[in-house]
Amino acid sequence: MNPSLQECYDGFADTYDANRGLFDMGPVFEDFWQRLARRDGDALDLGCGAGEPFAKNFIERGWRVTGVDFSARMLQLAERYVPEMRRIHADMATVSFAPESFDAVTAVYSLFHLPRAQHAALFGNIRSWLRPGGKLLFTYASRHYTGAETFDGHMEFMGRPLYYSHDTLQHLRGILADAGFGIEDEAWREIGGETFLWVTAK
Ligand SMILES: C[S@@+](CC[C@H](N)C(=O)[O-])C[C@H]1O[C@@H](n2cnc3c(N)ncnc32)[C@H](O)[C@@H]1O
Image (cartoon, rainbow, N blue to C red):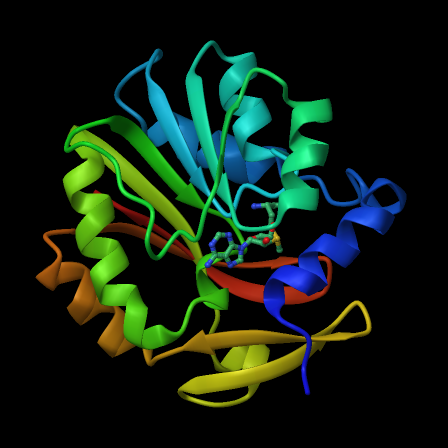
């Protein structure tokens, strides 16, 4: 039986230090930062892991950040690296916040771990948590990563079978529109030999 995703990420926490800062995510953060209307605000990082790099970047620029992750071990690392981040140990599919709580929401390399049937409901929630003018940035898997038009299954990552899912880009655009989002930018980025779609929605 495959280990749960939570167990896998708890395990990755042990080797996190060895891979820390391996890839320069600065340009990705900077691109999103330039798109935000505010220079002070509240950010939510879904699947925040150790709080790097996104939560940390926001905090260094004076924002208040809430991080959600269902791996207790990853949140322990976050406590060490980004102690200023408010940490919530929860599943992003079930966590809830008051309407209009955030100016920016990010889901960096994390949304693709949720079953694709749950994406539409999560986008609806995120839309309600964002304040007027707020923006969402997330990484989306596609056939570039899985080799299939739609996917629900396991792929090997750092020697472990991790669950991933995605739908077609046409479907993704549809559920974003249904949730009330307009797509501001779609960028294919190859980082660390893996290509994902980075979507900014407003
Ligand atoms: C590849 S890591 C990315 C961490 C961080 N965002 C980064 O860019 O380094 C994915 C993270 O998402 C978390 N995660 C995956 N599915 C989740 C879920 N349903 N709810 C909360 N966290 C989840 C994992 O525990 C892990 O820390």
